[in-house]
Length: 274
Image (cartoon, rainbow, N blue to C red; front, side, top):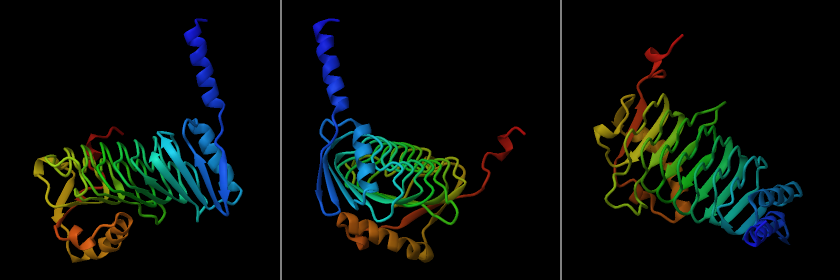
């Protein structure tokens, strides 16, 4: 084997074998995630939670995947300092994750319960199949956010995005509440939402701060202005969101909200083959 390949192999093997060191202070455990392989980091987090830790602090996170995945213990909080990798809080069932930075794709994939707060932007396919819990994103989000969100056994998932979104926001949405504010965005010239807003939607409700053009909206959606009853239900959600990011809820509600709801529970029923 050439020397360069031998050196590279040794570096990779050393990286994979390195386990994070825990610093404990009461029920708080801190890990330095720098250069830690994601599997080892998540294994260490799960072990500490099983041992009774209530607060996990992850420093220097740089794209490690699956943080918080499958954590079902209530009263547990994971703090992520850095950029969280794909599938943050996937299958999570009651814990809380707060990211002080950006998050990549798949945040809250099939999440059942709990809370995720991201102090930054997030990527594509957020909330895929999300069945419960709350997700707050401070900034912009990518494509297919809220796809297949659904209410499940009395749970109603909620996602609020403070910035702007790309195409297919709320695609095939089957339940829950999805809110897009367009306030904390780095894209001044971009519309609040991209094309195909609510395409295939057959449940739940979408709220967009301000107005959206007819050509942006999926044909399956009815479009209304949020009324007093809608705002009464949304206010506690928006107050919680604003508290997380030090925003003024009155400023958020100073603009009218456009409400999208499905016009049919089987929008493509005539296209199905039986």
